[in-house]
Amino acid sequence: MLTAMPPPPANHPNRDQTPVRERGDACPGALRLHTADDGALARVRLPAGVLTARQAHSLADAAERLGDGALHLTSRGNLQLRGLGAACGGPLAELLHGAGLLPAPGHERVRNIVASPFSGLDGLGGRDVQPLARELDALLCADERAAALSGRFLFALDDGRGDMAGLGADVTLRAAAGEDAHGPGAPADREAAVVVAGGAAVRVPCAEGPRTMLLAAEAFLDAAEASGTRAWRIAELPPGRGLSTAALLDRAAAAGIAAEAAPEPRPGPAVPPPAPGHRPPAAGRAAFGGSPPGAAYVLAPLGRLTAAQWRAAADLAAREGTGELRATPWRGLVLPGLPARFLPALADAGLVTDPASPWHGTGACIGRPGCAKALSDVRADATAAASGATGGGPGSLPVYWSGCERRCGHPHGARIDVVATGDGRYDLTVAVGGAAPRPSPAGRPDPPAAALLGLDPGRLAAALAAVRSGPAHHRPSTTK
Ligand code: SF4
Image (cartoon, rainbow, N blue to C red; front, side):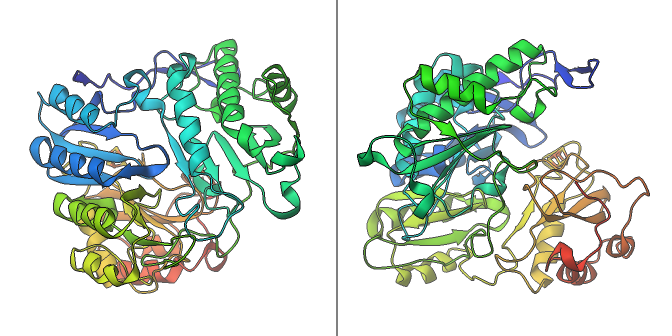
């Protein structure tokens, strides 16, 4: 059923200035479409980013038959279809249902699960968390209460390598390795995981991780209801109304889960940031030919793939890989088991396989003409800058282009923010924390931004190259 997205909810501050939301979140889904300037938009949740080659073909068909012919990867490893016609709601739902992508229509917007996309493929990490992600998804879909979660609530499962740490999830499971693996439970199940949710952190046997994550989500729903704020995310709970380790331990005990308190999470990101080397993977990166099976990794410039590119990846996955694809939060595709000799074919299709490509970490919102709020065609400008940029690669600071101050879809953590102030005009700032930068009280711009009085791709590329090596080399104009 096609349902227009309601207008943005009204917020009113209460005494402690915590927003009180009067209605549910307006996040689009596969059944609740958002009306944009380029047509309707649908967001298809792909828990842990996983889909089969057959499902990928169905999505390509949907993009061609009903949308703008492209598939757009999101910063949560989900997929957006844009440019949909006004009457496409029914046919789209039918197509997705037939492909097995709508297993629980009442829960389709709450299946926000990210998981280490190379887990089980490259021998790194403490444990393969993909089966745990599938179990969490099944628990969510079977839980009536979970349907009340907002479309923004995010679960993350990190296999121990730290790659999910910077995504700002509400509930994070981090599989332990080595000495940390000595968790509670029977000797036969000594693998442990830490579940972090707001101010709560408990250690449980890995196998109990999904149930514990669901308990944390239920605790959040109770806390949001009790606070009267209708918060969408854990971080929005008022001071003193957040989740506590003691309360989560009580819930675990009542559910028969052997749990113990884990060290208090640090303020800021839900889990410590990834160590160097645990950053987003490089395109083309793979460990091939053995057990574990390895994988090929490709990026899609600005997360957009044509239906033809998408089908090329799906065909290779079906014919030469394991038949599975995994969309990543870095707007790329992992192709499990695909041998290295097929990387050139993916490059020929227009996908990024070069580990030094400036497309690493370059992202953009939809901008003009897709969004009425956009002040500039950010995708064209980002493309022009990336074409002239040097010094890219997975170790570089991400660069995110936004058509206005809302910065939709920006990555969490340190990044370069390029925000339109007019047609072809931008402010450039460096954010060094876990949230969107705020305008500097002293006012913008910082030195590089001062040079950007108008967009010149060459000058912008040089400015980006000067600051993307890291915040340590640059005085941020805005911090969080
Ligand atoms: S950041 Fe602004 S211009 Fe870009 S999609 Fe969001 S609202 Fe539109």
